[in-house]
Image (cartoon, one colour):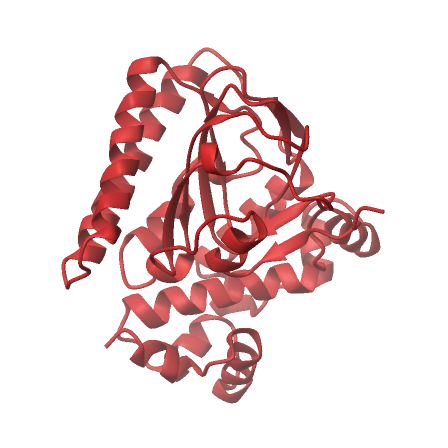
Amino acid sequence: MANQQPLRFKTISEFHDFRDLPKPEHPLVSVYNFEDLKYLNNEEPKSLMLDFYSIALKRNANAKMRYGQQEYDFKEGVLIFLSPGQVFSIEGNAEMQHTGWSLLIHPDFLWNTPLAHKIKQYDYFGYAVNEALHLSDKEENMLIDIIKNIQQEYQSNIDKFSQDVIIAQIELFLTYAERFYNRQFITRKISSHQILARLEKLLEDYFTDDTLKQKGIPTVQFIAENLNVSSNYLSALLKTHTGQSTQQHIHNKLIEKAKEKLSTTTLSISEIAYELGFEHQQSFSKLFKTKTNTSPLEFRQSFN
């Protein structure tokens, strides 16, 4: 019987191994061709969740993908964006017939760059966007060229310029995608947000402005009230769709913001703890260590 909880992949290597793809040539960035992914797993899980970004450019697939509340087929060239922690499922024949490319980017590759924050501003990475991006042949070829450039860069000898070159290519890709989305949706109304999308926005807004410093870390009760549902209902819904509780979602956002501040600012650990709503630095450091298996100081030093 299929597993009811999403099967979670913490690393790109784990995902490659699960899909019987060659070992990734870079631990934090990977490009693979869908023609190399010939079969679904014998015990394909009901749903999957990645701890990294996934951008898939697919066409001519004999499979359907469910993401958020929507179902997509891939008869034409389409682009799908997944953020870390989002849940999706794939249904199709055991033997896959599809073409296209996928780009996988682990958040740790972005932490000491402006893109670590900017990537969250692209709406197409959210559950609220419930339509795939349909591409013309010209648009598709432009994006494939960028993907090939990224692959070529990490396959070359890695040097001190490699990350900057790859980041620049990723930013170019995302900017083109933003342009193409605006073109596609200019005459369409994006459907109303589901609870998952509203939760994303609520947490992002709360953790971005001064609310966190003034009111402290949001409680499960606060989140539920702002989404106009009960705490129990929200936790049950999130457990069903993501395999994580409301508290875990709050902590995930907290750690995400902590990593961003540790890698892109010169604030002290105690200053960061205060900005993130902690009264005591020790409480912040303990939570960070529990969630990441490294201390805030060790995480910061890894970028020096």
